[in-house]
Image 1 (spheres, rainbow, N blue to C red):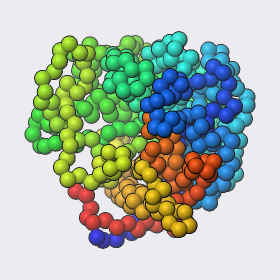
Image 2: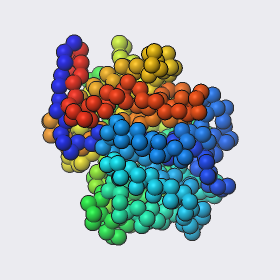
Image 3: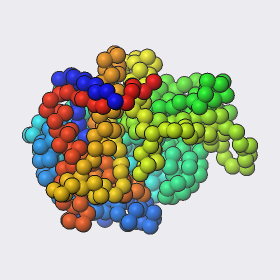
Length: 478
């Protein structure tokens, strides 16, 4: 094992992230302000680990000042969270602002700025209002696209003088993939065409928000607008053409479906042909495609956790079921891979470097940053020392290796501006709730959700203060 030391550029972001629904809790939430996640929890609570969910979360709504003080203690340069669309308004059709919630958001932004932590604000992190899901089928509707842009304008008007980093969506592909493509989550409807329409309408909504942002001059103070994507760094099982093609098609359906129109302004022609072949083409107009082409994002956040390994499909397809992209591929289980056994995810830090080189070579070297990367571990209490501090050396190693490859990408010319850890504190995740813990800060559920820095929190603080990373690597990943 060899030590590697990397200097961290002075302007390089070293922060942490979370979302509104995963931290705030329901304190102060009014009747009728349920989000999609709230409705899922209400209707399907038994699938959430030990019954925890967005109702309690980490109670950030009431304890934001306490958590922001911890951010100052660690020295975060940036903190990313979301505004809960479902709570920001009391009337989604007429975009009437909930002044109490809006004041809370303003207070969070002001307190962050006051301690020197730059706020990064996402407009939607799965917080689609349940009202819009029930009435319009959510992102199936072009009307919801227009309502989202009106909501965005209210947000920009209120906080645009202070916030420099804006994002339309976090992981815009996720909800509909879980709900409509794979039918794993409430309301459990397998509908591939609807999946693709949601994909398209979120891309259109992003372009319309970018257009609004430019036309209204919200970037005059140096502010930028982008999107947080979760492209799956995809590796073929082998060099054989059939495996290479399987990985290529997987990349089209899950990665390029958002990266190409949002960054380049156009959908891949091959993806359009496959959609036509399988009768899942989204409803669109030439005017909408022109808006997408002319309003690409300023920059992109990229969420990366683990690689995706793909091989050619070997099973006979059941022609009685709707098309699914797995018509072309199967997942490949790499023998001997390094694993996070709590989460069931492979650990392969080089995904960050490979993504950095892809953005450099295929996406005009657009400005980007790691907006999420982290390690969820179950039963962390067993790692407490005599002082009751969680000794999460596994997380320190994980962050160190991934940050190393982020800095390597910068060294080799990728326009990467930073690294954001998921997450600042332990928080609620869909279904897993608090089962797997990700935070630099422990949330002790048995002690009134008290906060305690883990060993990784102290380590992260030293990395930020020293602007230097030293990491042990067995060998560099090839």
